[in-house]
Image (cartoon, rainbow, N blue to C red; front, side):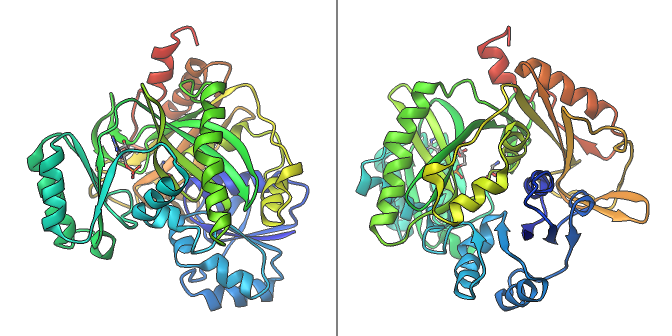
Length: 425
Ligand code: AMP
Ligand code: GLY
């Protein structure tokens, strides 16, 4: 098969790496890709926001399947336009991607299907939102409704912070994404991510993972896209997985199907494991980044078999098998991330690092002759397997210590919650 992969991050490098192991693959293109993806794919500078250009590219290269990595092209309907042109594409339609594109939409699905989630109010003006915030008191969570690159959520510990967040949204801090605001009850517990792939009717559970969203050790510092991840997440017991399937995932898939907008693609549930059981914090409609990297290191099945089964409605007869080992990924970022940072600094020492139990996925890199340069905030994902979380952690950090990149930094405690939970693991 000839494939076109859309995206340029560590998630897409992990996908490209997994595709390149599949006997189904004959040729892989990536747009725009990065220096790591270029090792297994031909890069194209195609403008992916121009859907006609993507369609022309697919026709001229005889692409059999397009896989969309990030959320932005899904939310604007790239998959709908490809399908209308007769080109197979993996990922949800514009209507189904509203599960990520609008927090109020997801709350509506939760109401309709009685899915456990934080109590909330939704508002289209500051006055009403402020009144609600004052009535409920802090701590409380204020969210811009639309896509805000992970920046539209304020977990307010004081009333003042909550009021400021409401005002910032309606004053346009998040552009159109903040025209509507969801104010939510503050949930306490441990967070976990759970991934399934759906074909519109069936949901195939993938695996659990835990991300580390804060920039610095001990879960301090500003929120980021994710500084590291590991899979499986021990907080998600088999019992919790089946409860989440029954009470969260399956009702969501059934509700979207009933509405005539079936969900096909990866559904990523962000969960809070509270004393009252698991509650849905949010949905994403694509693989997490860096969660995808750890999931794919553990996946024994051919990812293309699973993706094709989703596209063709065949998931009921498809299964996924996983390595027993733990996978853990450490994100190396440019100093200053998630604030401002330099691009173009040189990275050395990657050549001898990859092995069966270790992959260094590129997240933001660019090749300049024989020099590898940093080209983004999150730059490398050093991803290792191990018999236990501790062993995977040691393997990943051993590799990190061999990478020569003075302008980069990483957290030194990825996996700490799992290790604290079971110190012998
Ligand atoms: P979201 O973009 O909705 O995932 O929110 C980003 C982060 O904010 C989550 O990963 C949580 O850490 C936190 N968060 C979101 N909603 C809540 C909530 N209702 N209670 C507590 N923390 C929350
Ligand atoms: N790691 C969080 C995300 O992909 O949204």
